[in-house]
Length: 478
Image 1 (tube, helix red, strand yellow):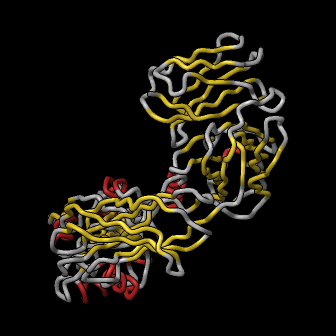
Image 2 (cartoon, rainbow, N blue to C red; image 1 turned 90 degrees about the horizontal axis):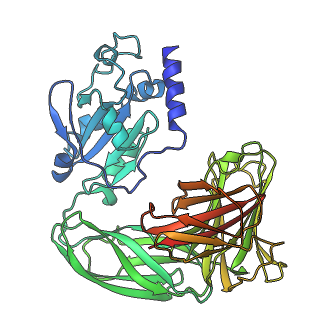
Image 3 (spheres, rainbow, N blue to C red; image 1 turned 90 degrees about the vertical axis):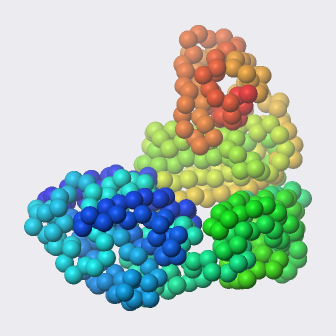
């Protein structure tokens, strides 16, 4: 029963959270093992070792099964200090409520003696490090490469772990000039004839300071898009986000960013992505329509601009009624390339209906940009569209004829054109969708002045609920 309760508590606490993603920089830590020896992660990495961290709990059945499989004993014997000396392994018991007796197999919340036959270090009370790595389940097993980059290698075979830490992407710096491209960071959707920014995370994987290199972006068929000459100063394992500049994609295409200057190792010189070119055309006036299923709080949506900034959004939990149609009118205000994404928190899609449509000044639907109708299991679906006409003149029968000014605002924001409804409310969310301001209107009338002096400078999403209707647009606090 105790195991069941602990597992249930873990499952509940795991909803909505996940560990540090692959490619993240590992946070440093120092921990003392049960023999009284200290272990500092970065000291091991700086010595050229890869480090495998096993976050487990004594009551966890899958942890015990993997722990007793002999995988880590095999790796440690062949590749630890008494073998090829390439790797260190740290077992971190991460549930601080367990005891030393549990760890040695004589407690009441354990599967057995976790120390029996183990030569690599075992540490207890590692809950703070478990949290530092944003872990949400047991076991979570990371391999940290000498360059401090992490990979969740999980319950792999001994061969699987060995192949990873011996691969070129996890090798310690040994060559003077080694530019490593870690990750593409730019958009993967754009519009025709639209300049699109490309950026990439770069690490100096060489032993000498990195002062210059050249990057070239090209399509799958070799057409060059842009070349960028970088200069600066990066020490070994230092990273920088490099912005190559903007380029125009002629069509939907896979593309590559590669190091084209002299380099001692070419196994980490390239990243790839697919750029999707949208064909959907819209005015700045769009309507989002969403019909919920039996889990209305499981969905949300957002609209981002060409720079990736959120200009309109909802949050999980905003929709509260089952089998109910919700509707939002958004005036994006400017021409340009936008992206609409609908999200499902649990990844099961559900029996929902959602579409985003665009309208002209007369309220006529001129294009349905995107439609979802019970589309199976998914966590996020999106579609890009190009706004080529600003439509600000909207009749009340089609959307709330509300204007918000001045925008940007230095603290006081006036809403003009409200109805006489007694059910008027304002919600303001930050760019990540978190609700930070909510206010019921104390009186009715055509205008309403909001005091936003408590907000920090930045971009926000304003939603006005006027009776059964909603109006959403982005505002800037300056």
